[in-house]
Image (cartoon, rainbow, N blue to C red; front, side):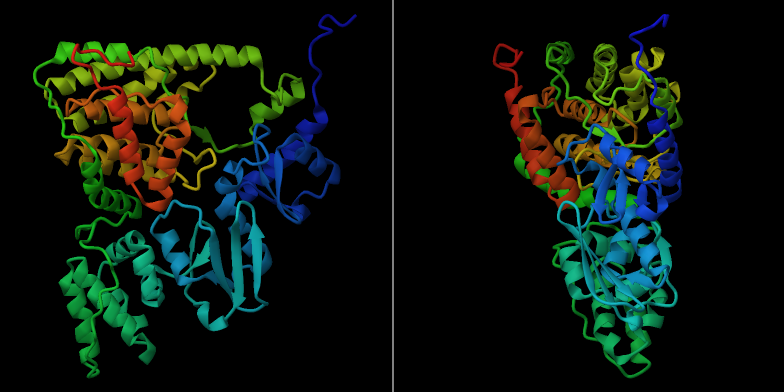
Length: 525
């Protein structure tokens, strides 16, 4: 007699298919072509269970069984890997992205584009329609495929210097942040001259770039370009291609595109925040009252984490499928335990944040406090789950060491090797900022933009926001679940469209809902 008749039976067929998929995802970064998965039965099973999702005829991406048909997360997470895999299979290395797309990759742009343009050595012109209104435009022009290509994210692209010379004036208007970052990565104008002096058609580009260097406060580089052309009796007409009032990146020796991007965002956005926020109330020596109001806020639920780890087939998952204790619809008992542990972790983290706020109210620099204490918040947030074995203890030791993706967002968080430099830059910006509202709004957004941890980035970002709000005497502000969609749209507008105004307005509106009354208590308490 079977001693455990109700025990679920294993699924060796699915386990075998997952082993094949795991091998392919490691080799092709989650992108699968039909010829790579020759076993029709395994392919059908993986599609049926949701571990594979079709992109176009003969092409698939790894997915999660929990994703619905309208969920774009797997596609946005796999976008560049798919473009790389598709172009590599079709053209080998006989192609190059156009100069504008090349610059977007070089400058660490984190947004999935609507269309990517690729130039090939041979072949015909075609437009490849892809999921969620994205596409790939391919056309042949051997003269526009440089001999000296470089590889970024597995794609053949123009080097930065050549791409800047060839990018049209519209690039500086439509993508000013990327244009500034690209210029900042050029150490000396001599990097541009081999391309600029290659033909008469580059004279206009030379004048454009000389003017651009003037605009970003690098007159020596502008003069170098002008002198190079003057030797050939050519006087350049300088036309500034930027439509910005002021540059957002100061001249420096920094070359990380991600650090440069954060600095540009901060400088370009801070006035937008100041314009929509009320003046800071100030601390006014009321530490006890302020901390009492913080305690009142605990009864409000914090947001669930808005981030998910990029879906991967793991050995542990394969073993669970083989044993029969994996449920594609989830495990209610497991979910209940997980939720209880998360609630305990949130309570512990809240107490740790309150201690940090007490330091801020004692006039410690809020950015320095957050720099020192944010690891403690994260450890408390996931400590109970780690103790129970639901979260790996190693995840409490530091920042993530792999990719992560935000559900249904066209923004891809920074690569793991950029996290330390980016966070260092963020803490420096927060510490140096004079306006509390700017510290709070931009600190919150850019922390989530970086997404330094595997999980909990949203909750930690809001803890950071409230710690920084406290530095100006603003009240602890809860982002209400009823306004989740508006919150997500505001974050997306900042990350993808470069507009911080909607998020600043949203936080100011939510803060007004939690402002203390004359009696000292919030209407929402």
